[in-house]
Amino acid sequence: MTIAYFMQHVRAPQHRRAWLSGGLVHPGSGMATVALMQHERAPQHRRAWLSGGLVHPCSGMATVALMQHERAPQHRRAWLSGGLVHPCSGMATVALMQHARSPQHRRAWLSIGLVHP
Image (cartoon, rainbow, N blue to C red; front, side, top):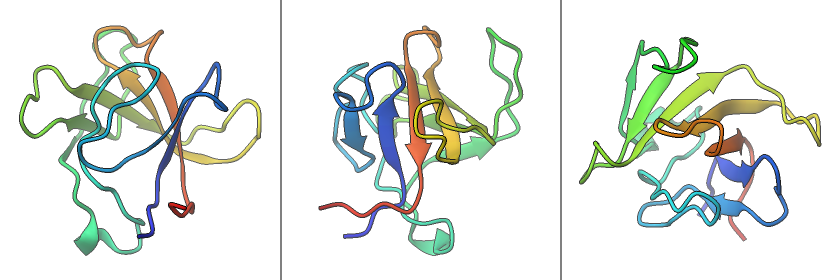
Protein backbone atom coordinates (compact mmCIF):
# COMPACT_ATOMS: atom_id res chain seq x y z
CA MET A 1 0.00 0.00 0.00
CA THR A 2 1.27 3.45 -0.84
CA ILE A 3 1.89 5.72 2.10
CA ALA A 4 2.48 9.43 1.73
CA TYR A 5 4.29 10.26 4.91
CA PHE A 6 7.55 8.92 6.24
CA MET A 7 8.63 9.79 9.76
CA GLN A 8 12.26 10.18 10.73
CA HIS A 9 13.81 11.32 13.98
CA VAL A 10 15.83 14.48 13.39
CA ARG A 11 18.91 13.46 15.35
CA ALA A 12 19.21 9.92 14.03
CA PRO A 13 17.07 9.55 10.88
CA GLN A 14 18.68 6.25 9.94
CA HIS A 15 17.62 4.74 13.26
CA ARG A 16 14.28 6.40 13.79
CA ARG A 17 12.26 5.41 10.77
CA ALA A 18 8.58 4.65 11.13
CA TRP A 19 5.68 4.50 8.73
CA LEU A 20 2.62 6.45 9.78
CA SER A 21 0.06 3.70 9.82
CA GLY A 22 -2.44 2.83 12.52
CA GLY A 23 -1.27 1.00 15.61
CA LEU A 24 2.46 1.55 15.11
CA VAL A 25 4.76 3.16 17.64
CA HIS A 26 7.54 5.63 16.90
CA PRO A 27 10.84 3.91 17.84
CA GLY A 28 12.37 7.14 19.13
CA SER A 29 9.62 8.77 21.13
CA GLY A 30 7.46 5.71 21.80
CA MET A 31 4.44 7.74 20.72
CA ALA A 32 1.68 5.88 18.94
CA THR A 33 0.75 7.08 15.48
CA VAL A 34 -2.76 8.17 14.69
CA ALA A 35 -3.76 6.36 11.54
CA LEU A 36 -2.75 5.55 8.01
CA MET A 37 -2.07 8.77 6.11
CA GLN A 38 -2.09 8.70 2.34
CA HIS A 39 -1.14 11.22 -0.30
CA GLU A 40 -2.53 14.76 -0.12
CA ARG A 41 -3.91 14.41 -3.61
CA ALA A 42 -6.26 11.70 -2.41
CA PRO A 43 -7.70 13.32 0.73
CA GLN A 44 -10.78 11.14 0.60
CA HIS A 45 -8.56 8.20 1.49
CA ARG A 46 -6.71 9.85 4.34
CA ARG A 47 -7.50 8.22 7.67
CA ALA A 48 -6.13 10.74 10.11
CA TRP A 49 -7.73 12.81 12.83
CA LEU A 50 -6.68 16.39 12.14
CA SER A 51 -8.03 19.64 13.50
CA GLY A 52 -6.53 22.93 12.38
CA GLY A 53 -5.90 26.48 13.49
CA LEU A 54 -4.00 25.67 16.68
CA VAL A 55 -0.96 27.22 18.33
CA HIS A 56 1.90 25.41 20.04
CA PRO A 57 1.64 26.09 23.81
CA CYS A 58 5.41 26.26 24.34
CA SER A 59 6.85 28.00 21.31
CA GLY A 60 3.73 29.95 20.41
CA MET A 61 4.32 28.93 16.80
CA ALA A 62 1.23 28.60 14.65
CA THR A 63 0.52 25.08 13.55
CA VAL A 64 -1.26 23.53 10.62
CA ALA A 65 -3.02 20.89 12.64
CA LEU A 66 -3.17 18.98 15.89
CA MET A 67 -3.03 15.23 15.46
CA GLN A 68 -4.48 13.14 18.24
CA HIS A 69 -4.74 9.43 18.80
CA GLU A 70 -8.33 8.30 18.36
CA ARG A 71 -8.57 6.32 21.57
CA ALA A 72 -6.45 8.47 23.87
CA PRO A 73 -6.26 12.03 22.54
CA GLN A 74 -4.94 13.39 25.81
CA HIS A 75 -1.90 11.14 25.58
CA ARG A 76 -1.26 11.14 21.85
CA ARG A 77 -0.91 14.78 20.93
CA ALA A 78 1.43 15.94 18.21
CA TRP A 79 1.82 19.41 16.75
CA LEU A 80 2.24 19.73 13.01
CA SER A 81 3.84 22.86 11.63
CA GLY A 82 4.43 23.19 7.91
CA GLY A 83 6.89 24.51 5.35
CA LEU A 84 10.04 22.97 6.82
CA VAL A 85 13.10 21.38 5.23
CA HIS A 86 15.08 18.40 6.48
CA PRO A 87 18.47 19.72 7.73
CA CYS A 88 20.47 16.73 6.47
CA SER A 89 18.98 15.76 3.13
CA GLY A 90 17.56 19.17 2.28
CA MET A 91 14.40 17.37 1.23
CA ALA A 92 11.24 19.42 1.61
CA THR A 93 8.89 18.12 4.25
CA VAL A 94 5.19 18.44 4.80
CA ALA A 95 5.43 18.99 8.52
CA LEU A 96 7.49 18.89 11.68
CA MET A 97 5.95 16.64 14.29
CA GLN A 98 6.57 17.44 17.92
CA HIS A 99 5.23 15.85 21.07
CA ALA A 100 3.16 18.41 22.96
CA ARG A 101 4.76 17.78 26.34
CA SER A 102 8.41 17.65 25.26
CA PRO A 103 8.70 19.29 21.83
CA GLN A 104 12.49 19.51 22.02
CA HIS A 105 12.76 15.75 22.41
CA ARG A 106 9.95 14.59 20.19
CA ARG A 107 10.82 15.89 16.76
CA ALA A 108 10.16 13.93 13.61
CA TRP A 109 10.26 15.01 9.98
CA LEU A 110 7.43 13.97 7.70
CA SER A 111 8.52 13.55 4.09
CA ILE A 112 6.14 12.95 1.19
CA GLY A 113 6.05 10.72 -1.81
CA LEU A 114 7.41 7.51 -0.28
CA VAL A 115 6.09 4.01 -0.70
CA HIS A 116 5.98 1.31 1.94
CA PRO A 117 8.29 -1.57 0.92
